[in-house]
Length: 189
Image 1 (cartoon, helix red, strand yellow):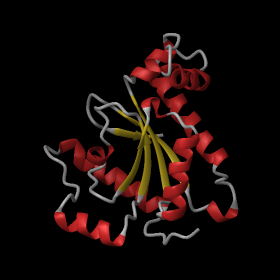
Image 2 (tube, rainbow, N blue to C red):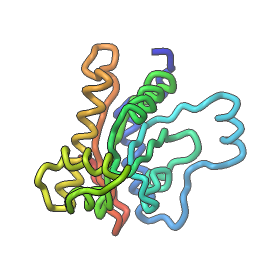
Image 3 (cartoon, rainbow, N blue to C red):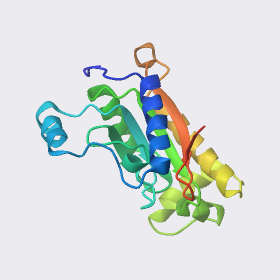
Image 4 (cartoon, rainbow, N blue to C red):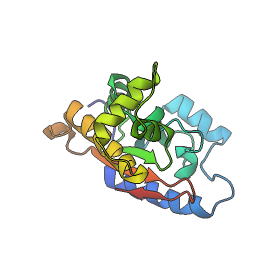
């Protein structure tokens, strides 16, 4: 690995949990978006403490949900938080070149992509997403349970594809989470 590790997976997970607690009562985001941090990350580079793979849903904003600022999170968004080679390449880049040790796959309740998969799928390009989710959830029809199954499937794809069982990658952790739209709470699985 060519990156300098700035934060362990356990430290990153605690930062996310603390940030979500702050978010629950916040009226505005407290993440650092100042000119100083923009200049610093431009000149010195980015060292995000966590990689967050989440849904593209406009109600799911990881930087706000975790009270994070510029340079804190490496966010990958795709409808239904499904994983393919593009997402794997982005994860691999952040882990190997930016030093991120924690990968969080965060689904959310009331997900349109999960709902479409439960309802039988979709057409055109959306079908690629719903077919992947249908494989993950099988015959599950409960929205929350299906969301959790989909998150766990994406976690497994990441773990298996990136060879995180290898000795040199043992310090990288993958965890799952579900964001609850109604109250903003993140439940770590």
